Length: 204
Image 1 (cartoon, rainbow, N blue to C red):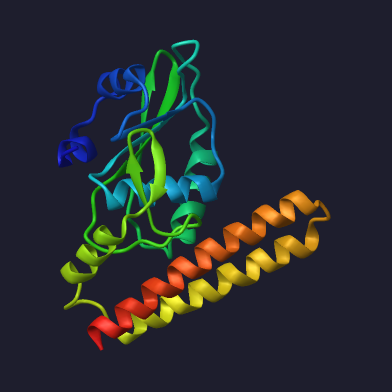
Image 2 (spheres, rainbow, N blue to C red):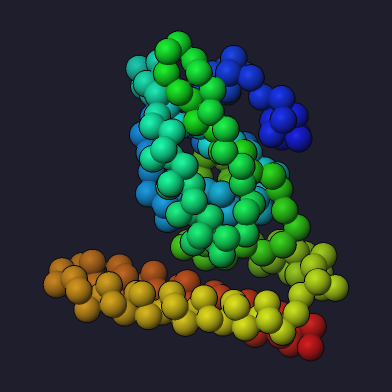
C-alpha cells in the first residue's frame, strides 16, 4: 500500500479493490460499523503495512450500495477520538454508479496505537493481538521519542479500560456476558500493564 492510495486513488480503483474483497490490506464493508470496531481496524492496519477500509460495497451481492457521507465522517471522527485524536487515517469519498464509496486510508506507522482491542495487527482478514516481538521492535524504533507523558497516557488509558469493563459488568445481568467481560477486561488490562511496565523498565 503506497502513498498513491492517499493521493491518487480513483473511484474505479476503489471499486476494483472492493470487488476483490477483504485481504491483509483492504477491509470491505457494506454497512457502517461501530466506532470501536473502526478504531480497531485503523490501529491494526497502522501497526502492519497500512491499508484501506472501504464502505458502501455489498460483497455478497457484488454491488455498490453506497454510504452516508455525514454519518461515516462522524463515525471516523469518533474512532480517531478513541485512538487519542492521533489523526492516523484520512477519509475520502468517490461517486461510483450513482452511490458514494467511502474510503478510509490508513498508513503504516512506527509507534504504538492503543485501541479498544488493545495492541492489534492485521493478519489476513482478521484483527489479532500484536506479537510481543513486534511490540518490542516498535518500542526500540520510538525510543528517542517516548517520554514520561507517553507512559502516563498509557497508564491512564489502562485505568479507563478497567473502569469501563467494571461498569459494563455491573450494568449487565447476564452471567455469560459478565464472564466474557471479565476475561476480556483481564486480558486487555494485563496486556497493557505488562507493556507499560516493560517500556518503563526499558527506557527510564
